[in-house]
Length: 221
Image 1 (cartoon, rainbow, N blue to C red):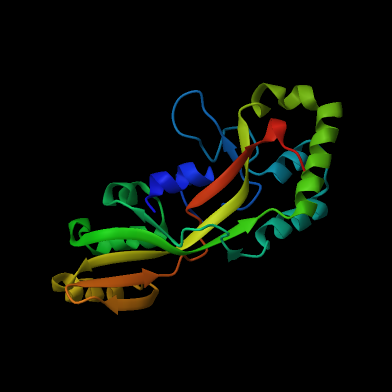
Image 2: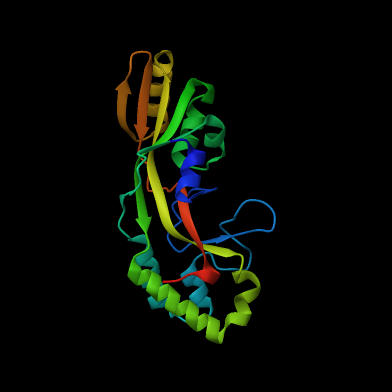
């Protein structure tokens, strides 16, 4: 499936700047102009950070809840598509560490196809959703005025999607690519030869490429 159709069919958003610090509960700010942002000056970057700032949590409890978000089990994505294709122009805009190493080690005109395969996902547990909803209700009753000006424009990540990076190149570039892989310390999982083309698969390194977001103001546990 093509990336645009994947996003539209499953109501998912591409993560504009993939890195390991993106976890469930990360806040995504909806600017008046431009793409959603993963940070906003003066505002928390995770829903539990907001609760900590509001005095609804103490440090040790905050730390436990953040750890729970990070430790949500990764499972197979419950979707029909097992591979999501994306073109080279999109690859250059995704700040994914594996793609970045590929870009640096191999001219992209030598790559005929990029895709995310073996799709996995992390999702907020029902217990986490109920807990967050309870804190939001307290916030609405006691401290809503403090956050109401900006809370209407913030979303929260409730699902994260991961996929191994796959690329296909012509066999004539095989030696060049494999030398680059060796020099750049890329984690090559698999290699399949198709005659005039070769497919390489790299681990996702626990870095998500897509997310499901829900508006905090309307969130329901």
